Length: 481
Ligand code: NBP
Image (cartoon, rainbow, N blue to C red; front, side, top):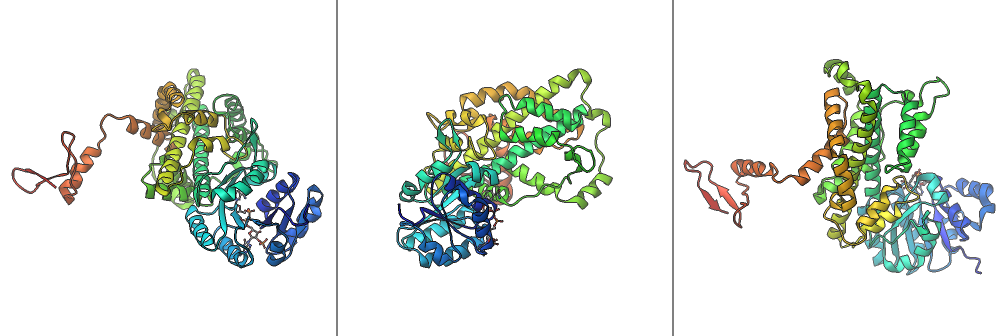
């Protein structure tokens, strides 16, 4: 065997360090590099016995330590730092080498970088990696984009270090250039929606039942054994069951109620607006975080704005069990909507950029390793197994599941409105469901208004063409536009 390393990782903060260890533990020799060499040294000092590491101090040494074609993983802060590393790295590489950005890059940046490196005879792979620190070490979900040629050499390595579910790796070639990072972005957007819906379920149950977080932890733990079974439901039970050591209070009560974000939810929504895809679940989740982060405005509103009576907020004792079940069904139905919308967004981007993404395969690679891993994803995989449904909502399994929960969903949203509990996720998901299935939408009136004030024209239900009504004329006659 050559002394040269099979793969290199540059950027050894939590993610890069664990990804490098994962590669080494799986038998690959790994060259190491970090801008400041302390991280390289500590990795080798603490975990050098886990496999074959080749520590280097400069990028020149790093590149020289790699077998050809070189496989160079970059795992640094997304944005300018990634460009800085690429700029330094590229002059040192040779034709056919593969640069892999495993950070959370915006897919448009990945498209730009891929085009740029392709011109220089290099492969650029934007790979989404999900699962946080632990996933990187023990098996993440990996979403690589880039050329098929680069996947031929890189794929087997990534498939080996990825999470495995039922013997299938949670890694597949997503599509050309930015496809991998796009899918990772939507994954994160869905993660936002999923968490928002879980938080709303918690809020409804806590206010409605007057239950303690520890009692709610038991409800979530029970839900985790059914259709909702997922990593996020599992850790919700853990977090709600946790007691703060310093105060003896439930942990959730000592945490400031202002949600932060790193930006992938926002990117998902911005991109969806450009593509014209309604991702209301992800948008509401992103806005809900933004709203929570305005404490001064919230304090002013709390002092000024009245809500319903306290009595309206409580669920009568005899209805408690039914209410818990209703919330579970509403959560499931709303979650189906959030995924349906995310899948629509991936489908739209796939068409727009010619990526030919296999949507069923995305559900397959999200089953393990990543934050949204869930039993649910097997159902999505099945839904795409034979044909691409017009919406996940009309795929038979989900159609039936949502139909089964429909009345419960309506009761929960009605209760939330009466009780003054904010449920933007549940409510907007139900509105989306009703809009999608409506015979006629009031969009017809909107078209009439647009024609009235702006002569924007409209189409008729009874014949082809575009029309304009001469609103200012006495007889309001119609002309073909
Ligand atoms: P960070 O995002 O905190 O980045 C720290 C790394 O970037 C260090 O290695 C640092 O080098 C390097 N770096 C910076 Br900052 N500026 C640089 C520059 N101009 N040139 C070269 N190196 C530079 O690390 P992370 O949390 O491990 O995440 C790495 C990537 O993985 C990010 O894109 C992140 O979004 C993504 N990601 C993170 C998670 C997660 O759970 N944390 C999950 C999935 C994806 P230094 O040591 O010399 O300062």
